[in-house]
Length: 117
Image (cartoon, rainbow, N blue to C red; front, side, top):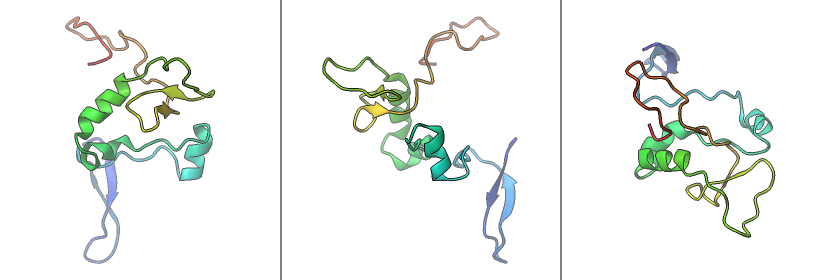
């Protein structure tokens, strides 16, 4: 592993670091909820690292949500700073589409790069 995570407590009640595992939650890029909301226009970003185990068919849900950005249906109001995504509860999400176009990665074997990869 290239990342160490804080774990514990051990038998002596102390926290310790260990090499990260694939099942570990991603560390938050924000020190607290308030700074996360401030940096995201008032919206608290979801911790997608726990969705794979906490939500039924979590991996499929994350894929659908990342690929699901659409233009809203006619008459569906979307205020500034939000994006329409029918896979997100309520249909509005504060996270911009992270996979906005094909061709974001170059593969050594010239495999075509698509958003769904």
